[in-house]
Length: 288
Length: 321
Image (cartoon, rainbow over all chains, first blue to last red; front, side):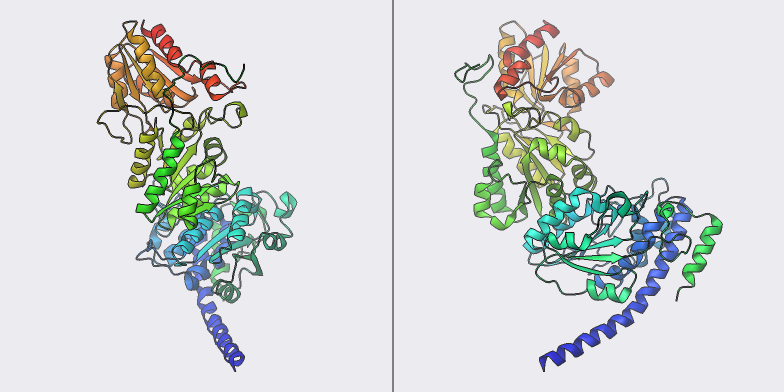
């Protein structure tokens, strides 16, 4: 009887996830459009990684995180740390879409004296938890957030989004080792596994594989999924914690949604021309 | 050199206080009265004197193992979660290994973390330059929005801890291991950005920090015998620096000697010189270490680099005698 009830509840959960995934797809489309427009206006940015991480951010802010744009520092909020701080434009457009600040200010991205620096600053942008940019900083801070949560009785969950290339920074593994040791069960790391870093593929630069086995060896639960599948992301991110930290290896495509940017290393921080921008926007807006 | 070698000139038989014990006791006291206080360390429970803290507050001690970058990042996250971390680690590894975390996660992010560099300077003596922390003042002072403070004795160590906790400002403080006497600082209290006058005088100014304050006071007594009145300033706040006290010293004396248990490039002496050369030029001498130290005990090394009462008095006499 109990098993049947659980099964039915799980099915309802999945049906609900499917419905929410449709809404998240719309949100992600809007964020991608704004990313391309923002970078075009600024003439600077990291469009490839912005587009690969978009669905992860949209799912978190659209359906998972307990955060309040009207009270961005409420003590029991969930913490989201974007360790790959160079993808600030993706974070800013997501925060603006959720009401943390006026989307009109996205036009000031990286302009002189704008609060929207090329890497996020918590003192200037509501919703930013810590100043990132140098790689390998986000996970240690997230481990501290999760430790504070545990000390206060598990008041909030902590999520950290890491680039795959930045896993070459040793500080991540210091943090992974300690989180596994401390069994920080309310901590989730999400790896934007797009396979490319600034200059080349991760595997030809300094190989990360077998990545899942490495995290498992450090005492983490590991889940691999399609990082552009909102329903899969939602089910994974909203799942109840187990007895240890968990890492979601989200397989993504750098430049996702714009055909001529996808999986092209040069679009790490190339800026689209006007013609390329229009083409990119047409492609993004045509997505169902 | 034998174990029975006498104290070098300037060694003070009254120098009996190790600031680490005051630090450890005060940390426990603060944790009793403020539930936000936590300690973070790198396998340094013993060397940071955290044993009593661990016994009383086991769940509030985060020992991340030998991993300084993670240690500082974790402290930033703990502060984000509403806590007030004291990061307790040997000064060379805290300031050197985690410099970028101190810059980005603590200072630039402006979180209330107190970074406590234990056993700074040449305290580790014959362990050698890998374990000496003589660069920390220069490195930390170059980071914006980070207070850099160097207490001179156990009482001031406690004062600095209370002040940093109350202010919530990102702070790097040295916690000395080399024994020092208690310094009489009259009725003055510690304030960030302020030096403390520990002896008046109008011929020369001795601006010293940390372990060098007691030696500067002894030097002033030696100078008095030569008819030189030395003003002694305790430069407890290296950043922000006390511009007013420096300008007054430059105006009212014939020269300034700075003395620090640190490399002479970029620390206290440089901070004072930056003010002096731009606003009130006066002759200066910068005393401290001039390079990597040779092998020797802490006391031997301080003597080797002239950081004794006699050495300080001699430089002051060269300057204004």
